[in-house]
Image (cartoon, rainbow, N blue to C red; front, side):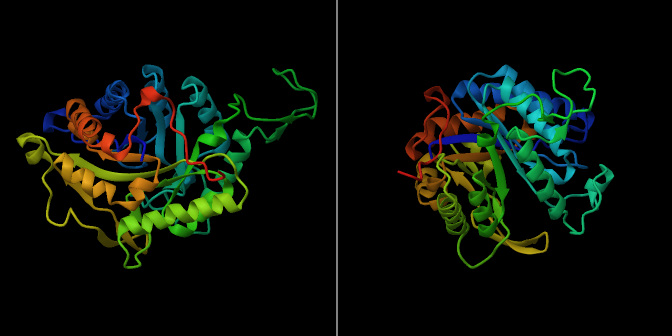
Length: 356
């Protein structure tokens, strides 16, 4: 690990009268947390995307606002659900965001996770999936999205083209175009096999706090194997750009009584969990809570943490700006340096060179 960021689920609800967070306040808090994190040297501000739930949904306005208010921090998603997306419109938005952010983008996408709605993507107008989970249309859309951001033609000019200096019948690409954007696209993989597919495509790997597998091995061992299989597939496919790898963990340093009260472990929280998600027997990663020396020892022993270049800390964003920046500052000051962290003042994060 040489970089870390925060991953926000963007929870809100209940309204001010009941002590809850409004959607407006959640968005403004997200921007303020990102600005504070940028000043602390944190490397990334990442946001989950969920639909039909009181959580972050359409990410591009938020990411654009964060990019405009910050200088060095990477902005991204973890992850965009492709089942709900128009791939060409997403390509336009992603390119514009990348240009606004001067390349500080880490756009994570995937098939999506289980959700409140029954085939919710169909309510957005995307029908035709024969898969109960919509994986088929997600992959089709993602392939078209990749073509578009690579600058490949996706339309043809009319015989009398209006409003653009193009020849009749000419091939047309999406505009705006950000030439290197494809190097900043990540696929959220939930299994070792899906990670290999990411490697073969030459993309970056985003691994979460759960894997849709349960082999008896510990979560960190499963995830470390996932990373190794991704890198092997990437190398064997002939890709030469150093790929990025991120993982997520819930980590709460305890430095005083308030920290102990706020983040004290609940029963079972300090161990991996096995459960069923999306019909698959799955392994969920543990929560790390403790004094800095204890966290350094435990995270150093976590093979996946030490193998990835970027660690995403899942944060309780609904608890406000001050508390979240307190968590990030504690980690940056007392834990991250011992893990190999390099703050954002030292430049953009790069992946591991798999060719040398």
